[in-house]
Image (cartoon, rainbow, N blue to C red; front, top):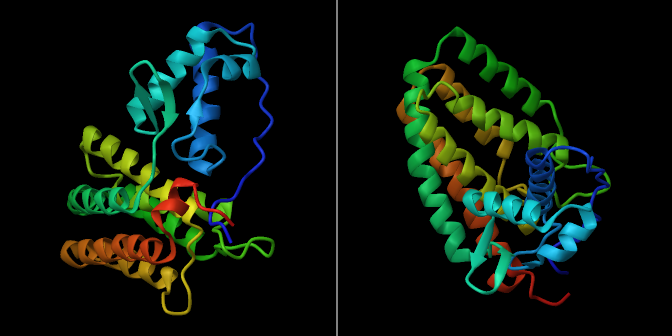
Length: 245
């Protein structure tokens, strides 16, 4: 069975009477959501004219939106060839994972050292919401539910929110999104051999206890386990969307 799932694009109504900046932001948000959800496949061509026709906007607005996605690392601009969705590969997954471990552990260490009562409350609330939410649905047992995915993102952000370095948090957010592309496309869910909830619990408890060394070690192992699971379950062809069912 192919590991990629084709999803119908959500309906989106853009107010063409809005200003150029608003139009660009709307196109950017729609294309970004499509890429992160896997509705736009890795390496897929993003043709400016059809996108402009779809949203009834100018080609300039589409180009600007695509340029913003290039800055996010979700789209590649090629000389004389236009734009395409950034490709995925197992080598890139490991690169993203190792870089994410380095940056996010630094952010976590700073957050634990600087976090105040408000940071602790938000982290506790984020953890409570995550642990009480099933991470699959009855309809889709091989993918995390959208609700769980959103709360998962909230939890990991809460861990590092008190970092105090905005550039570090920006880079961390970019790496998180890249990791999510692999997780969503890979359709990898923990089996009985892996208890993801317990992994999150150990990270949370170490952070609340201000035990930075343990929290960082648990976080690094958590990221690496996910990358290793995807690597075991997927081939480069499946990640690229070129495999056959």
